[in-house]
Image: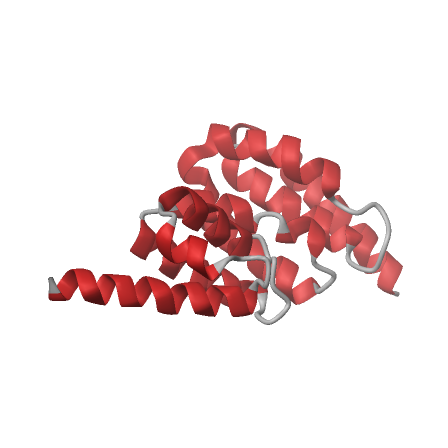
Length: 168
């Protein structure tokens, strides 16, 4: 009885915190509705749906919540890949790429498909961080597709050269 009570109180606290981070999250639904709503809310946090946390903090909290509520950490990392096309911060893009390079190769086929269909079409073609976003994208892609490492590494190196020239 006591452990069940603590779990319910914990879900209410988590729901309130999550609603503060993402106003669209319904804390009652999170606390009561169960796994599907919780999963969607946790993935939204990982995807950067809050401006109150850095992407690293959002990912850390999403992974913590995922562990507590049975959401697959791999799915959290996939959701986090949206930062590759939504961030304008170069340091953040590099940090996200490093994180994803560790997490996504575990399911390389699914990761490559996600990168090609969801991330690639959304990478900005203009703006201050567009070249860095492309470099980060290819860094993650190379980690997932070891069969094309040389070709993809050449592309990434060329993008970095272009980026270096554009900053001169």
